[in-house]
Image 1 (tube, rainbow, N blue to C red):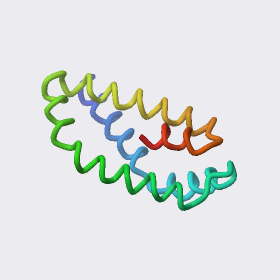
Image 2 (tube, rainbow, N blue to C red):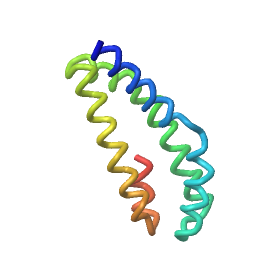
Image 3 (cartoon, one colour):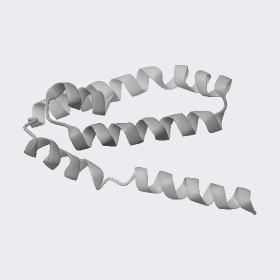
Length: 99
């Protein structure tokens, strides 16, 4: 029973992380902190390219270190990026938050 509960929690987290409401709000916050739209879009474009290129190597790494550990690591990194987003005030911090 505990295993099913964990799966439902994981599905809930994935649903909340995939909500599209974050992008417009994040863009407004970034603009209010002095980051222009061009910088945001440039970094988002680079991030999309990096995701496509690193998809297979990340899958191989996930197979080697275990799926559960990879999920934990990715959620920790997501949490750290949100802390950086909160303190965001220049282009360098934006690059750290995006990547």
